[in-house]
Amino acid sequence: MEVTPTTPKLDLPLQTRISLAVIGMYIDFTQKKNGTVRRRLANIFPPRDPAPVDDTINSYDVVVNPTSNIWFRVYIPKGHKIEDLPLFAYFHGGGYSLLSADVKMYDDLCTDLAVKFPCVVVSADYRLAPEKKYPTQYQDGIEVLKFLDNPENLAKCGLENANISRCFIAGDSSGGNLAHSVNLSACLTKFEQLKVVGLVTIQPFFGGEERTKSEIELDFKVPFLNTQRTDLFWKALMPEGEEYNRDHPSINVSGPRAVDITKLDYPETMLVVGGFDVLKDWQIKYYEWLQESGKKVHLVNYPNMFHDFCSFPELPEYEQLIIEMREFVYKLFNKSKKGMTTNA
View 1 (cartoon, one colour):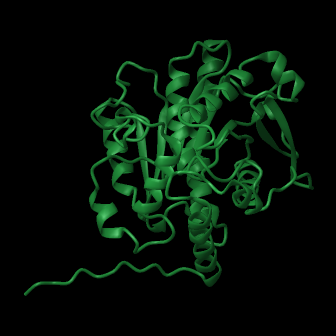
View 2 (spheres, one colour; view 1 turned 90 degrees about the vertical axis):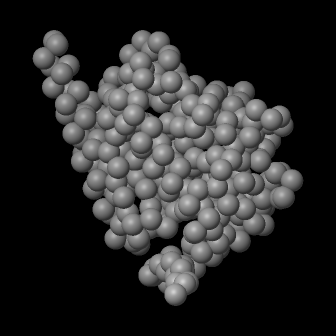
View 3 (cartoon, one colour; view 1 turned 120 degrees about the vertical axis):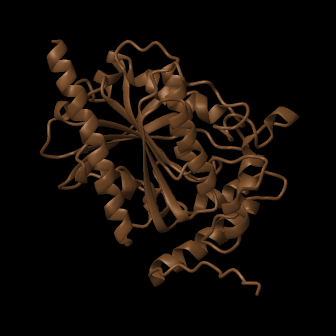
């Protein structure tokens, strides 16, 4: 007897379901089928937040490059010395063509990370597609790290005592892809002081020409992200040309054209995967590729979560993710601190 596959179901709070429906409509209203974006509409929603300053946090914006308008937002928890805290460079999601570091969802997330770890967060902004095509976003990301590597820049922005030699890179969705790619560039860059000791990729936005099992089985059955929308994001990002298909190494990072990382000092990695994410199979391929390349990687699976659940603080999994990230970061931070003390 043939068994009809069951449609996956998510038991989510009403607030979350409403938010996910709004996000889906937002993507469809802003993304045109030709790969362009209704930028005026995209800039209206979600609202931008000023840098938060309250009893728990000091925050301010720093311009990296006034010509290209690259900047980042700093979050420093009150009651702590900067030199005692990890430095956490974060890249926001949005499919490379939407959102920014100062939208409320990322302002809230980075504030939580800074206070609950605690750590110093540098939330990097970058130029958006399709107005700026690949590799602009990746170049902007490594420019932020090069800016932080300069002692004069650190002094100007109040981070002269930051742990630049024990830096972590992180991001979610397209920001998770950027975190991997910026880290890859960092492995190939000769910094004066900066060293990346850990990488956190939250449901990174990877893909490929072949449709995976999760893309086929979960397509249009899970919240807001489906293959139609992922394809539009890739179309907005990538230039014209056969070499810029979905098997490009910046998209299919572990595919046939992947960069050989076996001889690189690739840092220990935490990879977050959700069971109701259409991209989960690509993320698992990344996990297996890191293992095969001889790199340390920790897979953290949330089987009942959808893509980018880290933007929804009302979920219990949100708090659990912060705990998991904190444990990963401080394990490596304390280990590297011990190593520095021993070498001294």
